[in-house]
Image (cartoon, rainbow, N blue to C red):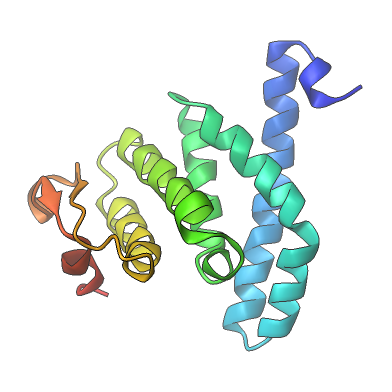
Length: 156
């Protein structure tokens, strides 16, 4: 039986277990990458990419669930090094990070998470030539309501 054939509560639980497991795998890629084992990190990401993509697609389809929002932010954090290398910037990476930004905003006043997500989104936007597009921010007094990607990138 596939996950899509399960009743909604069971489907959600199965998808969350899948998402948590592959978020941990994505964190392994980040750890490998930052500890000097970039080749191993890229091999792991390549091997698990289909599972990462499935989990991300499911997470991005959900809204108004703080547990799922937190998991989506965790995926973005875990794939900050490898995601930009594997995903098409315009078609895949930017939509992933925009969904992550929306999730961070739904999570409430989490200034650090949202600011870091804006920074992560800034890299693919700059590479893709979309740097002038203003983004909405709900960080409050720490950033203006509309900011340019370059402003956030300059903070890190």
